[in-house]
Amino acid sequence: MVEDKKPVLTLMNANHEPADPSEAGRPPTASSSRVKFEIYGEEMIEKRVKASGNSGRVYLPPDWVGHKVKIIRID
Image 1 (cartoon, rainbow, N blue to C red):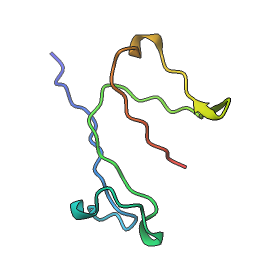
Image 2 (image 1 turned 120 degrees about the vertical axis):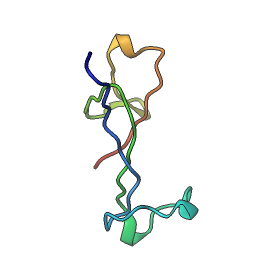
Image 3 (image 1 turned 30 degrees about the horizontal axis):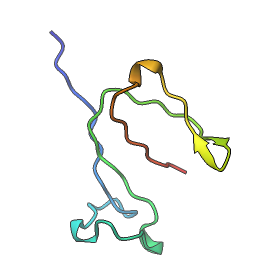
């Protein structure tokens, strides 16, 4: 049986140091505009968001329907 090893993603600041949990919920500052997230998951798909009226849309596989997902903007 294959051991279930899932990737992990940790919240880091722009200097690659662990983000201060006391700053959770605050908007990013100029010195920490990018952060690193560490999460466990089953699958990952990288896609570009398409325009859809006054919003954006990303299509996901039909077998993902009903599952919880997290979206992280990377650029």
